[in-house]
Length: 171
Image (cartoon, rainbow, N blue to C red; front, side, top):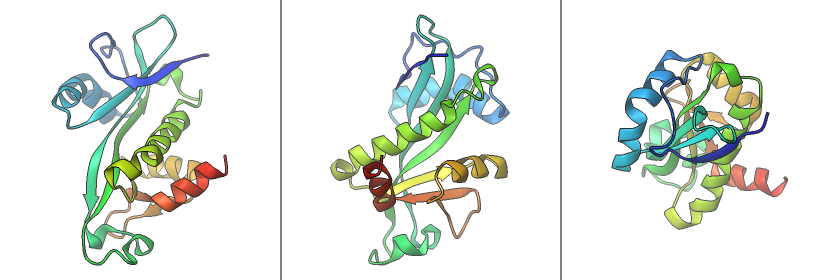
């Protein structure tokens, strides 16, 4: 299959029939994504098939900060006790009819690439991923072994900017 995107969610995108393996991710896209995107609190990127506006995958991200206690040791070095600015991958979902096509991995690569491109402009130390479950955490860590677990929440994963840049340079 071929896909278009990821592109910012807009009014032409059909989200009504989107269903992924997570009830929470499905409900968020249907009920809150447009409002969050229009308010500017969250950027929502969607994937569709060519010639079709039905969303088959999406992710939502925004800026956040990690307090020192929630920061992995490597990120704390040289940072003092100050909160560290990070991009937050808050949501990611793939429609059940499109699972196994590499969309989740592709969306994760898109997020990481955007963090690398924007980091110098916005002051960002890395990417924070909120995994919904142990299975989601395993999915992310399988794709990006450099993701480190937060010391305060085993479902929060952190990827440092220097690891992002090293990974991208090796592509």
